[in-house]
Amino acid sequence: MKYTIATIHGDGIGPDVVREAVRALKAVAHCSGFELDFVEAPMGGAAYDAFGCPLPDSSLATCRGSDAILLGAVGGPRWDKLPGDLRPEAGLLGLRAGMGTYANLRPARIFPELASACPLKPEIVRGGLDLLIVRELTGGIYFGERGRSPDGGTAWDTERYTKAEIERLLEVAYRAARARSKKLCVVDKANVLESSRLWRQTAQELAAHYPDVETSFMYVDNCAMQLVRNPRQFDVIATSNMFGDILSDEASMITGSIGMLPSASVGSSGPGIFEPIHGSAPDLAGKDQANPLAAILSAAMLLAYGLKRKAEAAAIERAVSSVLAAGYRCADIATGAEGEIVLGTRAMGETVARAIEEAAQGTPRSAADAGR
Ligand code: NAD
Image (tube, rainbow, N blue to C red; front, side, top):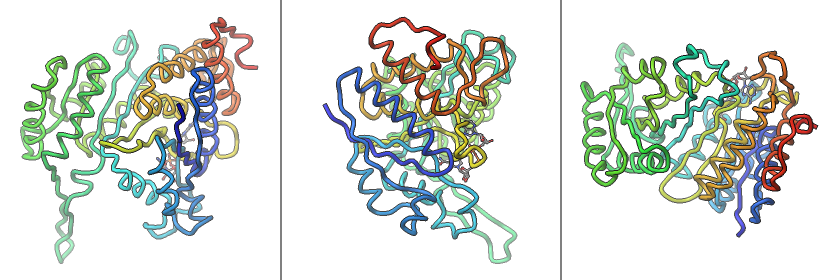
């Protein structure tokens, strides 16, 4: 079996972390006996420098012709003064629109070894945290009609959803819930907003098709509270574009580290986009200090959701856990505790790749060997 992966290295630390995610993918493919063909698709500031636009048609074509897209991050101060349509971020929006990726999946997971990075009281997250926010990505208030009155004193943005848009997002969320602990919480503001009432009605109708999944509903303001009061009550949360934008950032901060969090953006068909949630971190570019684990865990999501290779995705996740358990940290997740060994970007990627290979060979992992 052979898959084509479009790689978008992007800007800043993007190339560094993608290189390590590719290393992990190659390791797992080697161990599992399938082939990966990596094809570069320039995007962002790097594409602007080379081609004069942030998303060349040829890159979009490469992405469309792939089985999955692995993305680092784009942007940086060098390109901040460009007109909006030439900025690196315009490439990202163009890619999402061009690929029809309307569902954004953002896990928020606390690795037991990193529990001390969580800003919540230890008793609140005792036993770990592993939730998934499924956010609608291409509709709602960010895309609705907006305007200003002629005198500039009134402004409006419109939250607008069709039933079809809600349904297709919820289908993704239900499938994800089915593959996890079979609990889905639909978050809305149905006590006030008509669009939210359509979300709730659509979810109630769809729930009949997923009798094995327990569906619950929560208002967004309550959900924002519950995420810090008792986040372990959630497994999968499905919500609209703006609510998801806010809640997923809140959830990611509970885990304490932006360098650990992956994401996936998927549509009904065609390749999905798999990327760390962090940006291009210009302050770390070229210093070998970026944490590649968010990108490596995005590679795991690529395997699970993009290539439907769940066993191989789990192999990457287990390798990351074992490396953390052996005390290896990048600077952003290091606490100075005894036994920690701080690695740079490349060494962390190599350590994870080695852990994947050792696990496949059944070699017990040695902490002393792991970081070499
Ligand atoms: P950022 O995520 O790049 O950085 C925020 C902070 O987190 C910085 O201190 C950075 O050093 C740190 N950080 C980020 N990733 C890290 C990693 N892997 N390991 C260790 N530390 C890490 O956000 P920002 O500073 O607001 O944005 C920088 C640039 O990235 C901007 O141009 C922005 O537009 C762009 N951006 C791109 C994306 C994307 O490509 N999807 C997302 C967000 C921001």
